[in-house]
Length: 155
Image (cartoon, rainbow, N blue to C red; front, side, top):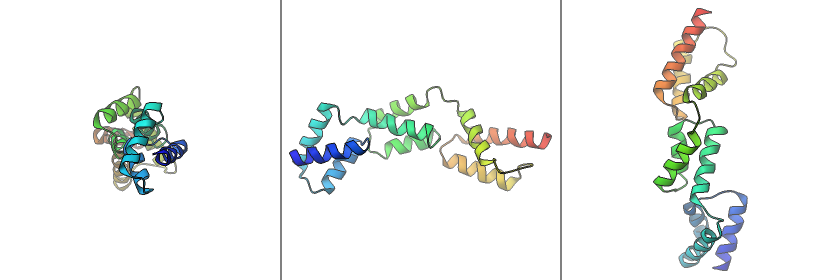
């Protein structure tokens, strides 16, 4: 167990990992299931392993750095193998105080940084697909694009 514990500490020193991710990585390093279970129990007891903290870190990064929408944030946290109740709390906390419309408008601004003039149908479709693929609400994206197109047309 000591080797699995030390390997677990080394892995957690590099970055925050969920219990499922750490279990998988320790198993790939040929540690026995009993050693992995013991190491995870010890790491959890010491506070080095915490799915809630990991979920919050993933969600915050998805919001603040990657600027993803709620659906993609949820998928990113779920992909770490974190339980659904912890995922819900992390996503809710990360999005607390975030204005979805302002986030979409900022993303549109970045997408249109090099574009001058009116937004044609092809460009609008490309921006819409990109923002929806990034997890933003299709309704919010559609409204923001329509408003941006009207404003560009009125200039």
